[in-house]
Image (cartoon, rainbow, N blue to C red):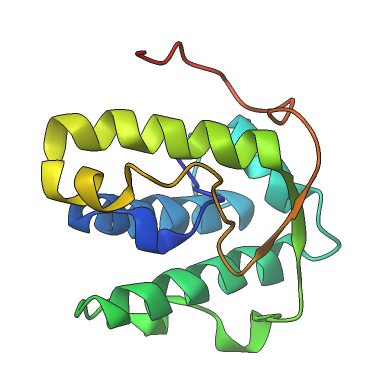
Length: 149
């Protein structure tokens, strides 16, 4: 499971589709409707919110907006519209954002060279609308993978 904190615009088509599916799975896990992934570290950022359900629904909402801009028709009916807080901002460190961007670039080199070319010059990652960047290293909950140089 990869729940990106970076701007969704950085993702390629496979990435945005996978993110939608994985965020829907995260929603089910948070609702107690899925047995797997209950202790997945990336769920921590949602579990720590006063209302985790509102947070994951806002996340799905922002994914659906980004997907719509790319011409995808994700089923917004899977989002609980009464549980979307667009004023919510989850703090994420610049170190985390930069790590995610580097990880995405590595993935894109293998699967979407065109998208890699579009984002390769970005050196300071920006967060997606649900997140607010703060100074700091990679988040403690991240399972850091060795990146290619």
